[in-house]
Amino acid sequence: MKIVSIAKYAILLCLAIFIASVTFKSCSISPEAWSPAAPPKLEGVLLENELLSSTKHINLDGWYGPEDIAVDNEGNIYCGVHISETDFSDGRILKIDSSGKVSVFCNTESWVAGLHFDSNQNLIACDLERGLISVNKKGKITTLASEDEKGNKFLIPNDVDIASDGVIYFTNTSSKIPFSRTHVWKLLMEAKPDGGLYSYNPKNKQIKTLIDGTYFGNGVAVSQNDDFVLMVDLAKYRILRYWLKGCNKGTTDIFLDNLPGFPNGVSRRSDGSFWLGFSTKRDPSLDEIHSKPLVKKLVYGLPLFLQPKVAPYGMIMHLSSNGEILKTYYDTTGKVVSEASSVEEHHGYLYLGGDVSGYIGKYKLEN
Image 1 (cartoon, helix red, strand yellow):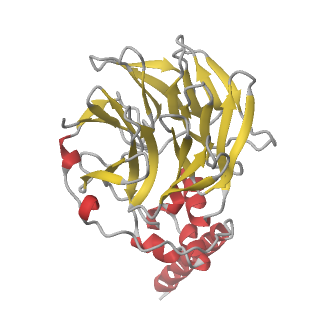
Image 2: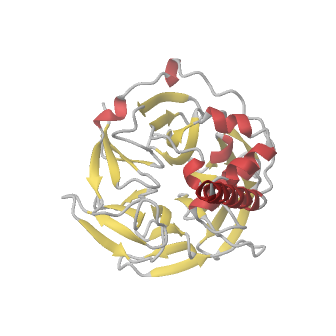
C-alpha cells in the first residue's frame, strides 16, 4: 500500500509541476485573434508535383542554416550558418567555390540571415547580433545600423536587397524580443505587428521606416525598375508591396495573398519576375486556433516536444512582376528539399536555402 501511495503521490506531483509550468509559460504571451482565409486548393498552377526531387545537395561541412544565399562576381556561393540544427548561438559566413570547397569567409560569431552583394562586392547582411552589416572582401565587418530612426532595436534583422541606386532595403522581424526558437514560435502565435521594412542610404547613412509593424516580416526584393519593394509577411501568408515610384509612391498594398504555405524568401529574376521560397506548407490545426487566443496560450505553454512540428515540405513559386503565380515546384515528401527559405538563381540553377538545413539545394532549371 505504501509503495502504491508513494507512486500516486509522485504522479500527482509531476502533474502539478507540469500544469504549473504550462500555466506559467502560457501567461508570457498575449495573442491576438485573427481568422485566416481557407487555404487555396492545390489545383491548376498549384497542383502538387515532385519537380524538386531532382535537387542535388551542396555539403556545408557540418554547419546548418543557410537561410539566404548570395553569389559573387566569380560564381562563389556565400551563406550564413549556425552550429547545429537546434543551436543558433554561434555562426559564420561560409564561402563555397565552384569546386564545392567550403571555407569560412567571416567569423561572425552569430547567425547571419539575409545577404546580398552591393556594387563594390561588399556583402550586405542581416546579423542577429549586430543588425545590418557590411562585410568587405577580406571579411571585415562594419555595422551599418542597429536601430531605426526612433531608437527601436533591430533584434531579428531578416532579409535584404539593394536597389540600382545603392539604397539598401531590409526587414527586421522584431524590435521587442531577440531571436530564439521559442521567440519565433511566440511571434507566430501572438500575431501582433512588430518590426518593419526599412531603407538605409549608404551615402548619408540615414535609416527610414517604410512599413512600421509587420507580421513576421521576412524576405525582401526590389523590382526590376526600382518601382517597388516586396516584403514577405510570413505569419499572414502574404506578400506586401511598398511603392517607391509613381502615383502610389509611399503607399503599401498586397502583392499576393492567402498563400498555401509559410512564405519566406523572395528574389528577383533578370526578367523582372520573382522566385518565392516557402518554409513549409500551412498547418490546418494552426489556422484553426488563430481565432482562439486562449487555445493559443495553452498550446504555447506546452513543452516543445508536445507542440506542433514543422512538416518537411519543399515548395517554391515562380511569380510574375504583377503577382501572378506562373509555376509551382514541390518536393511533397520533404526527403530531398525539406524547406526552401530562399531561392537564388545563377547560371541556370536555383540555389535553395534553409533555416535548419545542413545543405544548400541545387536545382537545374529546364530551358
